[in-house]
Image 1 (cartoon, rainbow, N blue to C red):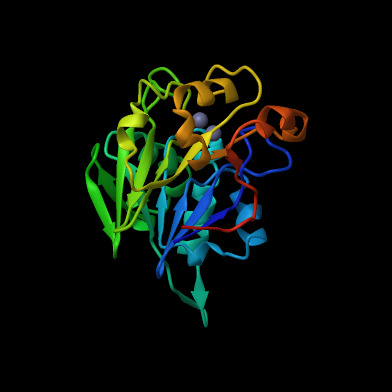
Image 2 (cartoon, rainbow, N blue to C red):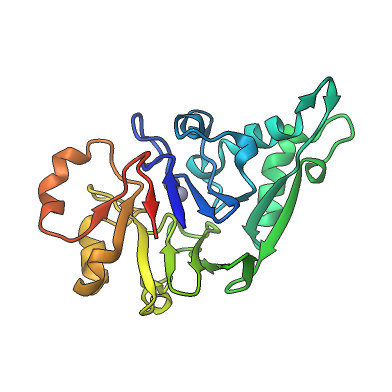
Length: 252
Ligand SMILES: [Zn+2]
Ligand SMILES: [Zn+2]
């Protein structure tokens, strides 16, 4: 499996783009979140909207969903020799988030008798329910209240025969989302948001180091971090944590 980080920055990033990823699962490209910077980050990573087979939306903050409407529109409004050749966007979302996501998209998409369902098809998952991409099993875990109080959000686990990865999404309270219970001996990587400054909605470096047992630190890939990350280099150098870099390809 290959992972292409389109961006690794926090919501207010100016330089690192929003924390969005393309997971290449054999022939399937799964986009993880679609923030407002997607229109630039996707082309800089040499992908286009039509390369995407599925989009997973973790929650409705703009750095995770602000670029979705444009992507859906551009895939729909394609023309081939003057013929309209629309492509629906397949969106994977926690079943509880579906009504709010449809409402959000409907503001821009519903016109001239079209509805959101003309542009998108939705795959809804409940906690732990598995969706299969060939050899890969994708399942969600609920992180509602673990990022922002009362905000619906989820992370995911992606498992294959030899391994699995965990993606926390935006999270501050790892204990509440019971992240450790989802890790097993096959886990090869934990994608975890890390803030280097005190933060009410994201885990800080200290909180990450404290929560995960030391032997797991080598498997942690920090993401969604501050633009001025170089200033905090000293905090990282003593740890085994890796920071994900924009446009670097990861392979598992
Ligand atoms: Zn975010
Ligand atoms: Zn968020």
